Length: 411
Image (cartoon, rainbow, N blue to C red; front, side, top):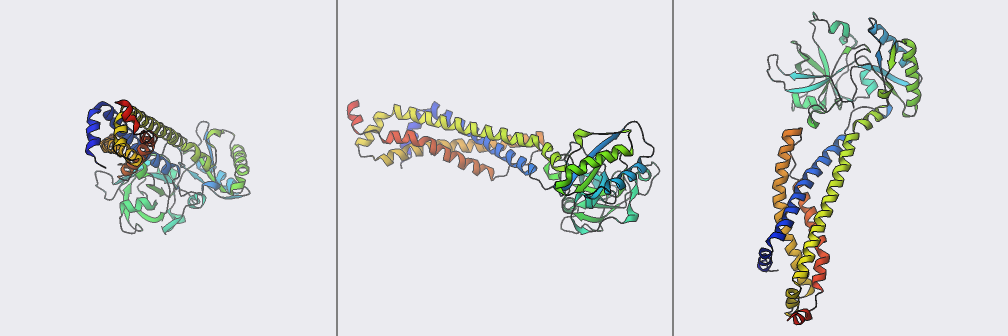
């Protein structure tokens, strides 16, 4: 197929050709970034939390006024909750995953480090933390009984013991000590001037919020500090999936009977799966919205290609008839319009790829978005090439069906 006649024709229809190129470029730029955003949101929705989600129930409460015996009450609560039929383990936490706030602290590898190596979320754990959440230790061990610190002791201004040991996630270990085992290594965090030694590494444990973006989602560390219920009011119970409603009701009744001066926060007391579902609701909505935008853009672009091709077929009926009279086959006419569309689409895609990169740079600077992987550019280009060929096919078929006698009748 000779390209020169096609380019000559396009030069005579610069405005129409430019509009199609611009439409394809804009569609390419938006689709590439939209697909990237959809992929990121789907990864968030399907993220691995490290928790035994289908077995966990959260009950959150708050006190009326202050309770000077909150530590003793917490021990009473835990003993009663663990005695509920069907409960495998129960713990109290300062925070739980799948909420919009979290406890965080900078992590340094040396005492005098000016800028933190990373920022991690802080879970304060009592004895059944690992068992209740269903975390998987891949290195090291759990905390020893004598390593736990009471909140009332560790939070005092004159406490100088620091946080002697910690359990961290595999992602955090890889970031702090790449290519090495984290067990026995030390770091500085939580404002302390004494090193914290890593005694265990869990495979996964996400932070409650999206602070730091997807890359920092699993920068989590666990300190052996027993917190009272007043620090967040979060009780977490692990049971069989089929008994979650039963355990939830029993837990609420026990907590009310232990101290009537506390309020169960019903809107926050849910299964972990329900918390996850609500937490990612916005991401699911965005996926649907971006999907609709992509579909609408593809339809509009296809209609633009069909409209332009149909217009050109109508304008060039005599020219097509002459070519047919000179021996051009239907296949050659069909390939002519398909090649013409391919050239326009290619120019638009090249411009669109450059625009897609520019839009991604803007999103990176504004919304902590990751760099657009190059894979999405050829994926968007292939989609638009296919769309262009499909959209131009029917107008091109109509052009190929123009009989040679049309040239004679037009003379």
